[in-house]
Length: 184
Image 1 (cartoon, rainbow, N blue to C red):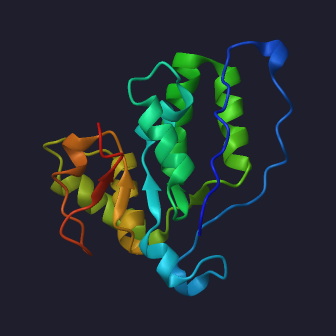
Image 2: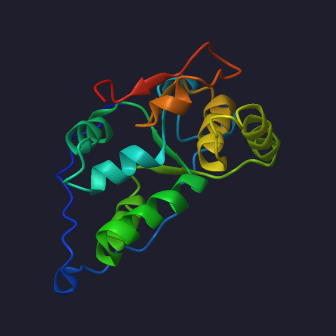
């Protein structure tokens, strides 16, 4: 699958320029065996996205904006966002950039370029296990949900700016995640 470059979003804090958002559609990723959307091969190159790259993609002044924008625009695989990540990123966007940027980000999600991945019931136990095992980091629920989703989907690539946590974690299905973007 090849992804065409999207134009850079604008997130100015100007209420007069807020466009109505497109009607949201359900864009949910499922496991390779249960999805007609993707082949097993495409799941191998799926990118699980943590909150940091999503925030940096929105905030043009963020030091990692360019690298994260390029990654999200050009990565060939499905872009998968665990639902618990959404709560963290919209809080950061709203508290730092305002409600206009938050609503535009939600509009991007509704546009279907990224798939929302719900927490599977089995993920909850794995999240608790990871939080307990790595309590000294401390590893939180949101980061643990990224790991649980990647493990369940067999994904090897994680978009994160949080090298401290994600270089320490040992996933069940591979020795270590390939962390992107590479230049952080």
